[in-house]
Every structure is written in C-alpha cells, then in structure tokens.
Length: 423
Ligand code: HAM
Image (cartoon, rainbow, N blue to C red; front, side, top):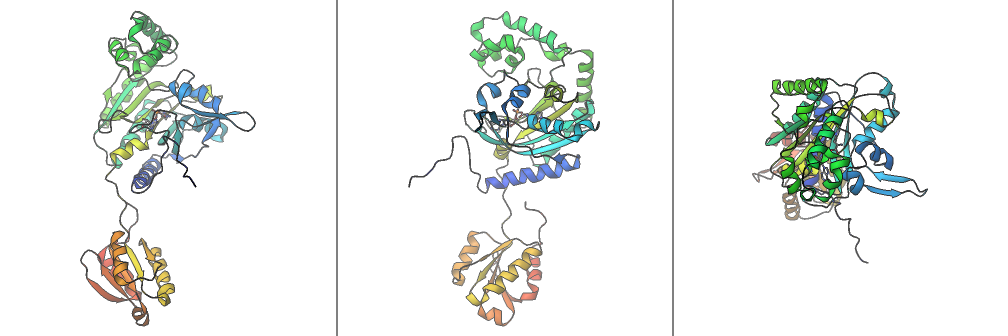
C-alpha cells in the first residue's frame, strides 16, 4: 500500500522538539497565572464572518491566507488564523462581558494560515496568546507588555527587541489616513508593489508596514502617526512608555509598526529576534478598543498579544527533557509482577522511569538503559527476588550494589532527588 503524506506546511512534533513546546506551555501557565490570567479554550472552527469582520477584509490574512470551506450544510467555516477573534466572541457570549470587571484570558494552541512555508513560518503553527478585556488604562498596556517580557525571560531568551508604536484612535486616525493618502498619491505608482497600489487608497496604513523594497524606501519619508496623535492618544502612549521605562523594560519606538490585522488602535508592539532569519517577529500584539463592539458586544476595551511557538522553538534548541531516573531490567519472567509493583511505587514517589517488558540478558538490558540515557539501572532476577533485593547500578560510575527492595528510594535518593517538574 502506498504511504499517505502529510500536508505541506503541517508538521509532526517529535521529541526533543515537542519538549520545547511542553516547556513553553508550562512556562506560560506558570507566569500568566501569576498575573491572574485564566486559560480559555475556544473552538478551532468558527464562522468565516468572525474573522472577516475582526481581522479586516483588506488584510492578507482574510484575503489570501484563511482555510475556509463550506460545511455539509453550505455554511462558510474557517479554521482560526489567530486566537483573538474567537476569544472575543466567547467573551461576548459569557457573563464576564456584563460583569463590569476586568477579564484576563490566555489561550494556547494551533492556528492555521495558508502562507508560503519557510523557516519560522508554517501553515499550522502554534500561539501562546493573552487578552485583557475591560481596562483602557495605560497601566493595563504596561502590565500586559511586562507579562510578555517576563514570559520571554522565563524561557531564558535574552537578545530580543521590543518595538512599539501607537496607531491612534477613531478620533485622530482618519485625519492621519488622509494625510498619508495625500503623501502616497504624490509618489510614482510604479514604486509601489501590487498590493500597496491597491492599499494606498483603501488601507494606507498597511503600506507603512510593507516589506517590498520600493515601498520601504518610499515610506521612509512618510508622515508618522506618532506625530499626529490626538491629545488623549498622545497622553496614553507617553504614559505607557514612561511606565515601561520605570520598570526597565527596554523598547524601541518604531513609527512604521502597524501590524497585519486591522483591529488595532493605540498601542501596538512586536518582539523581534535577529537570530531566526527573515521571519523575525516572535510576538505581536496591541490594543483593540473597538473590537468587542464591532463583534456585537458592549463597548469594552481590550489589549493582547500572541507569541509564535515555532519561532520561539528556534531559539530554544538547547531545551531537553531530563533523562529518566531509572530503568528497571527484569531478568526472569517470575520477577515481572514484583518489578511492575516496584516501578509503580517509585513513580508514586516522584521518580520517572520505565521497565523493560522483555526478559533479556543483563548486557542487553544495560545497553537498553544506556540508549535511554537513564541515571540508574535497577536489575531484578530470581536471585534478587528470593533475597527481597534489587541490584542498583549507577550508570555514570558503573558502581553496582544490592539493596533491599524496601530501600530502593533511599538508594535512588543518593544519586538524585525526585523531581517536581520536567525540565
Ligand atoms: P500576529 O502578528 O498575526 O498577531 O501573530 C502573532 C505571532 O504569531 C507572530 O509574531 C509570529 O510569531 C506567529 N505567527 C504568525 N503567523 C505565523 C506562521 N504562519 N507561522 C509561524 N508563526 C506565525 C496575532 O495573531 C494577534 N492575534 C495577536 C494579538 C493578540 N493581538 C492582540 N491580541
């Protein structure tokens, strides 16, 4: 029979790579719970309109990248290209949206975008996502950015740049859009890429973010939105920067950072790494004060971010799961039951290990234990059974001694402590 290939841009995650993903998820839960974020799991499939209305009809994500198909009744469904829209839909459906308080959610999981696969870019990728709803204070912006920063630090990542900008609000943005359109119209249309020729009128802000060299050069002289903010947006942004400064979170102002999704207002940010190639944004986010209302909910402000786990994984290559604490080698069929009891007891005490189910020679068991890079090999044969003992072999020193089965924990404890986490 012929084999069935996996889909282009979709990947299987084997260890040790999957270990990095476990590490990222464990650290996200550890850090985010400290900031009072609760885990929210939303469906992978949503109505297409949810993304069209929130992310924006004009964006690359909605125009070119969504996995959209009709279900059996002809309704248009889309596999989520990001988490924010689904979180907001769920929030609006929940009692939290009428509580009047602040809600904080985090979401971990796969997202789907039909992009050209390359290093750091997949068609199924994974995000660590966080959203705070119900607070528009600049302290909320600073808090969520500091949580993102704390998360990256907890992963052990150092060489990162936080870029930040403000995109204004419905009060000041239209004036800026007009000024920008005016500037763009004054340039030779030939310098624009095809997308920007269209966008320069329908969504001029996106031209600022274009990576095509002609657009980039032309945009260098464009007006800057930070110079055109209304009083409210300017005070808000200045305060965010002041708080970040006071908490020693380094940032770089990037007046051309506009992000690829249309729901943003005011503060927007990205975290960039120079060590992972051209797909250098490891995280991105910002404030979206109009989004809850645009999706049919009350007027509730929000801010959030998402980290791309594939890109973080490129930076976490050193992470390895700890080797097993023990491997129990069974040397005779009659010792099998006792061996299983012993292994279960050790696992109950916090040790990680496995037993070999096949009866083999000592040599072949030790080879197996070596392959698994265990610290200790326990050997149980008929002789040991009769004496209520087990052989304990320290695999690094090669020293082996017989100990009472009642004292195995003590013997293992001499080599290492039982662990309380995986990494
Ligand atoms: P985004 O910038 O589209 O924002 O994606 C966030 C991160 O996801 C990117 O910085 C990148 O690391 C990763 N990413 C995006 N596309 C891919 C891909 N095809 N392959 C691998 N990684 C990818 C959002 O998704 C917003 N929902 C973030 C947000 C949350 N804003 C407010 N709240």
